[in-house]
Length: 403
Image 1: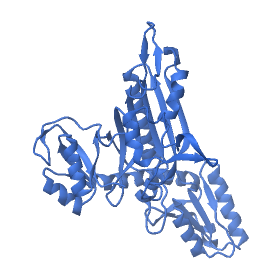
Image 2: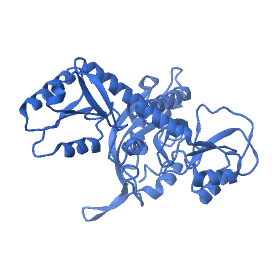
Image 3: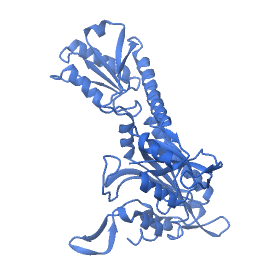
Image 4: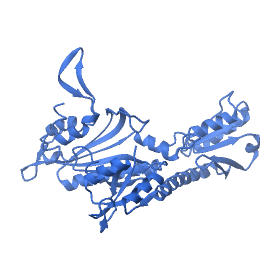
């Protein structure tokens, strides 16, 4: 408890979510233990011992661990009392190096989300009230779910010297002077599994982009008791595996073809091939494309190359469709009346000029349940009018209801 209380804004921001242990082994503890809500304070006590000289910098540490947040209302994957995440903590000699690390972390998260999960995101800066407790500045990747709600999918924080000073994390520079380090932290959690499920899933079940799909192709013999067909399916799978494609032959006995088809769909397998005696004799195979619920034909002679090209196209197409849906649901408004109407009828991201007054932010949240998501990194400064107060504003912010 003494460590987490050392940075005032940090403990104040986390106070409602802390799980605190006061007794252990039938006895009252001399000092309460806070079950790890995040790792800044417990790690930085050690940073102050490890870092002595500029030669020790930069110090960049990454870890995977479970954390506990006392959530009163939980959602599968999105908000739970315990979750797994990756968190990185870095220390630098200059603020410029730390700021570069913040963006490097954020860009890595955006790359994973967009290039692997096929979930488009907007990179931006959080408002003062929405930033990480104790941070100098918080950057974020925000994704939009099909119901129009926003999901904060990863954050990267510029901690400035807000932790290095109270934890006395200092170093001797090349001139022999003592300096406090500049720090960052950034985290990416199993919340993105929820983002993946909601962005691409449908009424039939999961829909996986090929890059993240545990099984990319399901091969189903029409009759699992026909050994000739099963043998053909196994040989076809071997050809694909030699090209690095993840294939599964579902020849489970006593399960109908219809059951196995539904199972493959529910599991989100990107491609499905059904093979019987007719398909064995044909020059082409028919493949079911999961995310479109339609069929494509490929030459059997070059099935490996054809399947790989189709998987690459599916990955790109899933991302393009999700991005188009997100862009279609970004609505520009100029007044609070337009803001309310858009929030009630259109959902999605609402883009509006805001003068960054926290009172306005709190009032709008109370009236509409919408919060500021971020000001995009590529949003230029311009002359505008605050949609709520009518005062001058310089940047357009994204607002939305969120999970």
